[in-house]
Length: 197
Image 1: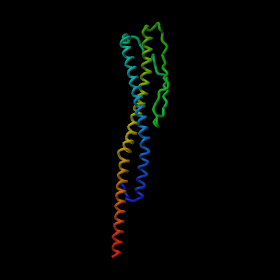
Image 2: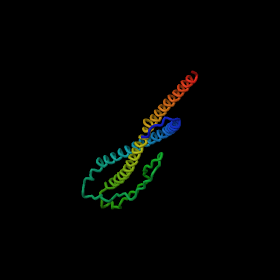
Image 3: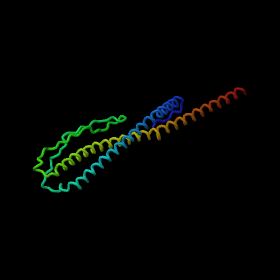
């Protein structure tokens, strides 16, 4: 760590740094607040998706107990054919956004399958959409969590380390400069008194 110079140049430099820190801190704190608000919305959206998935499972358990039959094959009947995920810029952080999901339903004979397969296909399609939405929402929330953590660390660095350190350095330099000035005045008075005698 560099030794603090106790000069007017160092005082000017420390004052300029302190001014920059104080200018930068509010914008950094605002960014943190915006990210926290967005993180809250992402968490609420994820919780809502989880609730809808639970409802879907409960509906299937309640209304379609016949799915337990192993003779009716539903494998491959409903598949995700494409997913489009883009990125959204939130105060400089890129987070994923689900734009579109294509779910393909394999054609099947309504005569060869039991009547309840139609309801099962609807629920399978819904559950697949919800699972994809959940995965993208989870990634979004994880990205925002990481961003909030980093920005909070920076806010704390400025607020609890850099600004107090600069203030402390300025105080030390001012005390040293005033002591030096006072010592100079005292020396000048002593020299003047010696010359008078």
